[in-house]
Structure formats: structure tokens, C-alpha cells
Length: 432
Ligand SMILES: Nc1ncnc2c1ncn2[C@@H]1O[C@H](COP(=O)(O)OP(=O)(O)OP(=O)(O)O)[C@@H](O)[C@H]1O
Ligand SMILES: [Mg+2]
Image 1 (cartoon, helix red, strand yellow):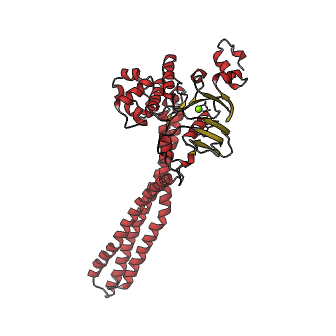
Image 2 (tube, helix red, strand yellow):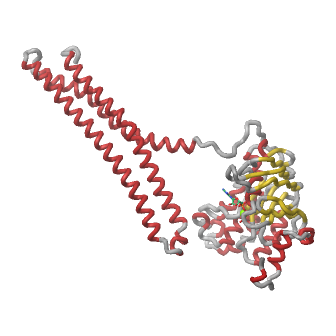
Image 3 (cartoon, protein in one colour):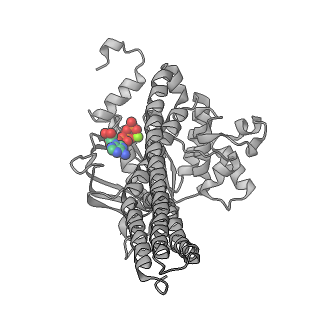
């Protein structure tokens, strides 16, 4: 083009530059709008998931209309954001197309004037238009590609935000793995902890659990029992003080090797939408069929599993919805039995069980506890009679320690709780 006529080349280049500037200028608003579209879409799917997950509560409290309105509002926001993005993309593509057409027209006009002046031949018009197309076409393609790249960049940005999040708890650089099975002595030294900086859920807890012994934690709801148990698994680190396992600070032990030593029955059973066999074997995937069956028997789950149409192969639905509360609890227990760990943490393991099953499970639990360090949290005090040590937590502080008989002799919270539970003749008016 420059060889033919440099002025025409300059006109073409100027128009090319305007195209490039346009693409660059549109980058920011397109990325922003794409990010917003992703955000609104994820809000809509979160709402759908929550509402469908809690569909029974929605129906029971007659909140269908409220949930529909909320969903419609969020879906509408998402729709509007999508429309705005589509409008911007359409407008920018139209702009590029118009620029492209105007540019071509300008080149034809300039070249035609040259032809009329006799400086160029008519055939040169065709040649120049061809050259212009060769120059503009890649720029136009680039502008379309840029717009779709910006959408993906916004998505990738959100993904990396999550991937780059530092986990709250991770291995410290000098942490080492536990090689041999632990003895299981656990010590809490002036452990203070809160979920928020100014909150004290545990306040200066001192506690020693000798290896192979059992300790029960009792106390009012919200006293910090589950929190204390979760510190042993290092779901959180103490704010002050430290926790030792066989004399080693938990923070000096690699997380994976620490958690391998501990079997837990959480307060709420956590089950997956896979077969019963896989749910139990979750704690030890390499376990044999016999081991899984033995664990199910020990947890009192054998009979109900056998009564299911596909037995151990029955798939139990999301979070185990196809089972009763007590059945879910027993699968969670079977999982802990199977793990065969030195340390066992049981957070209210017998809630949701009928009296007979509870008695069976308790006797199985006593067998499980033998020779292992066991931490058992319980509201029903008959479940804790046989432990070596009972601790009473109140408002995050350890207020009483001793055996069942020792604590009954003291005038304290334990005796109050005991009297409340075992004096059914008490009239409601007398309950403090
Ligand atoms: N993930 C969390 N984030 C913020 N606060 C929490 C969290 N979990 C518990 N808490 C607070 O910590 C306190 C102790 O809770 P925790 O679950 O340890 O009680 P608990 O003794 O196990 O009670 P319960 O007998 O009802 O199970 C409560 O006041 C609770 O509100
Ligand atoms: Mg709890």
C-alpha cells in the first residue's frame, strides 16, 4: 500500500489504530460486567441449592411464596446483568463493523479521487480495497476474540480468588509426621480460643488425658464442648496456650499424620450419596469386606442394613436422606469403629437412638474405648458413667473434674444436671 500511495496507507493505518483503541477501551467495562454476571449467577445457584436442601422446612412453614419471590428477584438481577453484557458486546461489535465499513469507504473515496486526478488507474481501487480488507479483517477478528477472552478472564479471576485463599490451618515448615502409632496422651495447657478475635469460647483450659483413658465432657449447650474436641483434630489452633499429643505440640505434627491417629463421630453425621459400604469404608478405604461388616455390627447397624433392598450396596441419597436419623448416626459410628485409631472423639454419639439401640451401642462403645484415648461428649449422663474422668465445661471454662461418684458428692453443676435428669418426679415449677 505504501508502495502504491503512502497517503492512502496512512488513512488505513489511522482507522486501524482507532479500531485498536476501541477494543482496548471496551476491555474494562466488559470484564466488570462479566464478573458481575458470574457473581449473580452463583448467587442464584446458591439460593436454589439452599432452598431445595431445606425444602421440608420451606413447606412446613409455608414459605414457598417468599422463596419464589426471593428467587425471582435474584434471577431478575442475573438476567439484567446478562442483558447489559449482551448489549455492550453487541454495541461494541456493531461499532467495530461500522468503523470497518467507514474505513473501507474512506479508502475508496481517497483512491477514487486519485483515479479521477489521473494519478492512479481504476484497477487500483480494487487493489486498495483488497489491501484494506487484509489489514482490517484480523483487527475485527481480534475485537471479537478479545470480548470472549474478557468473559473467560472474569471467570478465571473468580476461580483463582478461591484457589489463592490461604487455608486457616496448614502444616508449619518444621512440622514432622508421626511415624509409629501414638500412645495417645493429650494435654491442654492454658488453652484459650475464640472464633472471632474478641470472643472467648474456651478460656484457659488445662486438661490432661492420660494415654488409653477416657474422658467425658458435659456441660450446657454452647459451653464449648464441640469446640474443644475440634481443637484436638486441629480444625483450629488455640489463640493462646497449646495442645500436646504425647508431649509434642500439635502444630509441630503434620496435619495428615495427626488426623490419621484420630477417629471422630461428629455431632451431625456427615454422609455421602454413595453406597452404605463406601460410606463406612470412608475412614479406611482399604478395609476388607469382613472389617466393614464387623464395624457395622459393632455400631448396631447390621440389622437395618440387611433389611434394605440392596443391603450394603444401597445408595443412601444426598447427606443420607433415605435413612432415619438414628440409622445415619449408626453409620457414622461404624465409620469410627472401622478406622481403628488410637484416639477416638465422640460428639454425642448416641443421640437419635432408641433406648435398646443406645444400650447396644454403648456396650459396643465401651469395647471400642478399651485401651484407646477417648473423648466423649454427652448430654445424657448415663452414657458417661463408665469413663475414667469427667470434665464439666461452662461458658468455655473447665469448672469441675473427677469421676462420676466424686462429682456427685460435690455441690456443683454436675450434681444439678444429674438431679435434673434423674428426678422425673420433679414438677416443672420446681425446675430451676
Ligand atoms: N463455627 C463457629 N463460628 C463462630 N462461633 C461458633 C462456631 N461454632 C461454635 N460457635 C460458638 O461457640 C460457642 C461454643 O460452641 P460449641 O459448638 O463448642 O458448643 P457445645 O458445647 O458443643 O454445645 P452443644 O451441646 O449445643 O453441642 C457457642 O457460643 C457458639 O455460638
Ligand atoms: Mg456440640
